[in-house]
Length: 172
Image 1 (cartoon, helix red, strand yellow):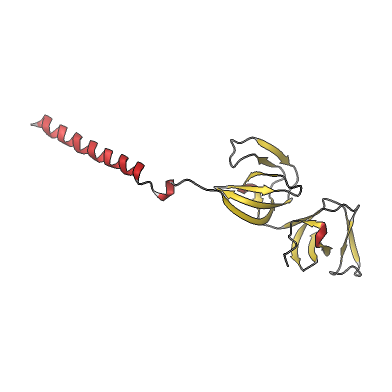
Image 2 (cartoon, rainbow, N blue to C red):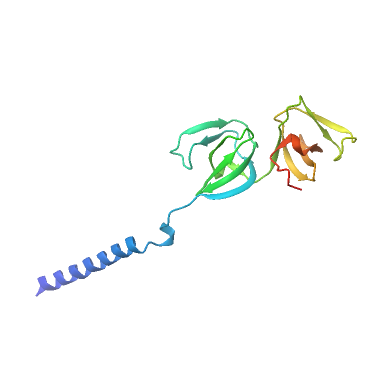
């Protein structure tokens, strides 16, 4: 009699286990659903002094290149889990951990000229505050149709929008 009760209890446990197993494989919970790459389109900047850019969204992917400057503006084009695919000022793409970027906007001088002028107002006749060389990075303040307000070395001024990376032509 005792053996029959133990066998009956084991049988009930086995049935319950198999039922759970079948339910797990045939009716997956949404939390187990496959994650997907989400297309995005916004500007961000690097939080760290050194940022590894990888070939895929994870630490197991090889490093394509490394940025050794903080605050470089990048366009975030896709997101997956806690990784962002970015496009840099040269059009190169790769994946970085979201912990290494911030939504704080910065702008970078990208011009074929030897320098550009940073003006006190958003017109060419205003006083020149700085002459900015290529690759100078400043904090984004705001933009108008043709100009962007930028802060470099704690000084605010205006730069013509076509000479900057980190902002689109359509932004106002």
